[in-house]
Structure formats: C-alpha cells, structure tokens
Image (tube, rainbow, N blue to C red; front, side, top):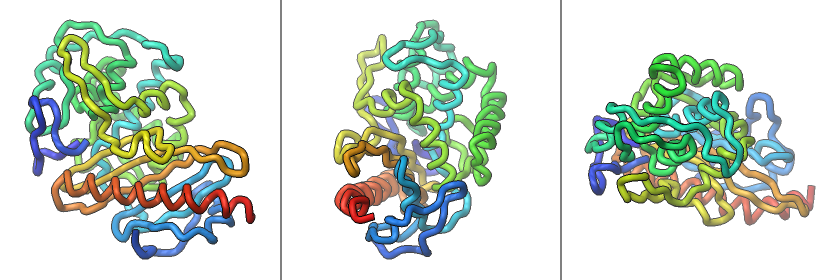
Length: 308
C-alpha cells in the first residue's frame, strides 16, 4: 500500500508499489508475555532502525527492539480489517463464506494510479473468501473499503469496530482511523501488531488466506501475486506487507519451525524501515530485515531449545 504523497503506479492501473544490525536497546518483555530465557543465547540480526518484535508459540517472546512508539503501519492495517470481518462473519477453512455484491464505488476505485487496488465489477456477486484474498494478497484498498461497508454499513462504523477489537486484544498503543492503511494517522507498534497476529492466525480461514500465493479477480482475468515476497521460503506461511513514504516498509511475518520435535508457529513484526524514502525502498528494507531474522531464528532456535 502506498500513500498518495509518494506513489509509483503499477501495471494495468491496478497495482501500486507497496502493498542485520546492532541492537537498538535491550531485550524487553512484551506486555503480557515474558521473554523466553533461551532468547538471551540467540544472536539475532535485529534491524538498525524502526522497531521489531518476535514471539514463538509455546516458548515465548524472543524480544523487542527499537522505540516503542506508535508509527504509521500502511497496509498492515488490513490484518485488523480481515480479523474483524472474520469475527463478524465466521467461515470454515476451505469454505467460500458469505456472498457480497460489489457496489459502484468499489468498481470505480478498481483502477487507480495513487493506491493499490484490485478490480471488481459493480453488481457482481463475490464470495467473502475471494474478497478477503483480493484484500490481503495484492492489498486491494478498494476491497478493504467494500468489505467494511458490507459489514458495518459505512467505513466509519467499521473503524469503531476495529478500535474496539484492538482494545479487546490489549493493543493499547494502537489507533485505527481507516480500514486500508492509507491514512498516516493509523498508528501502532510492533508489540501490538504481534498481539493481533497471534489472534488472527488462530483462525484456520485467515491462515489459509494469508498463505495464498496468488489470486485471480473473477470476471477480469487479472491475476495478482502476494506482496509478501518471503512467502513459501524458509517455512513462511504469511502474513502482510505495508509500505508508504511516511510509514516506510512494514512486514508482519509468520513461519513454522520444528523445535524439540514439535512444530512451532513463529511470528514477527518489522515496522518503519527506511521511512521517508520511496515505498519500494521501504518495502525492500522490511523484507530484508524479516528475511534476516527468520534465517537466524531457524538456524539458532532449535539448538538453543535443546540446550535449555
């Protein structure tokens, strides 16, 4: 996702760009979750800028680095949008979910040079699953707004739901002001987004959607690849990218690793990488920071767990 202030238009008018270092502080507990003792024996390549946080299900936090202040998160916002939609309209894994009729506004917003969108046709019926895929895989802002209107009647009412959900998850440093991430006033922290990622990944349908490598928009023949370039490598099974000039590059990632004979879900968040540059530069930096953390964790964590 890219902000209007600094965007690069993509192919077909449907796709816009975006959507190791020394520790910057000491290992600190994530609220509600103690840093795992074995984390102190790991030498992780935390990013030199921005903020990052990592946790391992069943083991605990591997730490947090960087300033713990809310920053713009761009299209990472859509994790909460999807979470609320799936909470309000539950669907089983592999199920299509409810049906949604695309309105004229969503169709008109399908073609944009100033934001990431995905094409839909006015009056056409889409499954809930397909729309969630179009929102999460190519990061369609118009799809996020369509789903919000379908769920709550209007986008402002849906934003209220997002903030209530955030409060319920203990995301005390997070404020949502829109459903897509276009607004720089939507802000959060790595720790808060990690809380949300844990809750969202508990849902099988959500896990399937964010692991989708590509999606085709019905009726248009347009196919989009997932903006998460780490997907499918090093056990990565999701989650969401987001980039803009004010937000920099942002990445929430999920990978799995067998540790002491048990498959564990590892979740990480990298925010505010190369803020103030182009969305492409920020996105590349966030992907590289995430890739470095994942590689180091997968290399070191099994041995550290065996020694613990």
